[in-house]
Image (cartoon, helix red, strand yellow):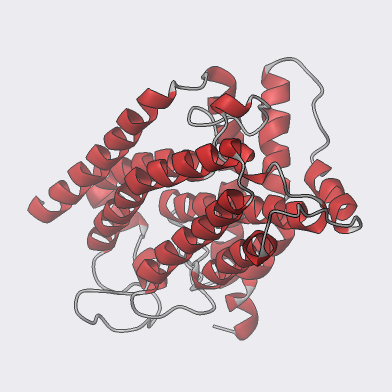
Length: 318
């Protein structure tokens, strides 16, 4: 294992993450019989935004200014702990799974705090909805990953941190997800994957939870929180959203594609290809479904938690 292979995950995320929204939008366009946006549209948008200046309201404070950079930093740090299939994270350590979930929550906190700092009723409404749904999404994420950790069993191909008080590194957990594990506990892993997919749609404000292309403030969740951001600040928000989407799709791809060969590059590249296919899947879901009513979203997340809990019960009693 070389230091260069450990950097495959963070570098690929930083480079290819803006491509994921392009794949989703192009998939939706093809499904609707349209040409759609270019695949590299977000790259062009980021370049344009970073060349501009930012405009700040007189009513905002340093919280509004620091929100985008702090949120992006939290997600970037999380990516250094994320395994790419069988390739361990660059900063893997025992219990890093809990730290990653907290970093995602901290990124959400900075975004919501910046939205509330504007004093806008619309942005405060979006922040309230974001926090409400995250309270329901995070337990499903943790329970689902707990089921995956127990199904993966002992350490896999790589020597990761030892088990301490029942916690292991996420890289160690994912290295143990081999074809034999899928053959024995495939149903459990599929239940966990379904729960994680629903969480991924929720955390990234995708249909059926939210529509990232809408401009109706009364129905928006994430987009309404960033209405007052402009220039480089808005660019950091868009980039952080793309990295967050990459993060959750990488978790799913590493779970669903059990390529664990001795060649780390094959393992990592297979996971990246899986991320692109999952992006197509997200686009198909958004093409076939409409947004749920806001009152139905907690029921969807309760269903995700039920799937994750069922997977955990099955692996404990199996």
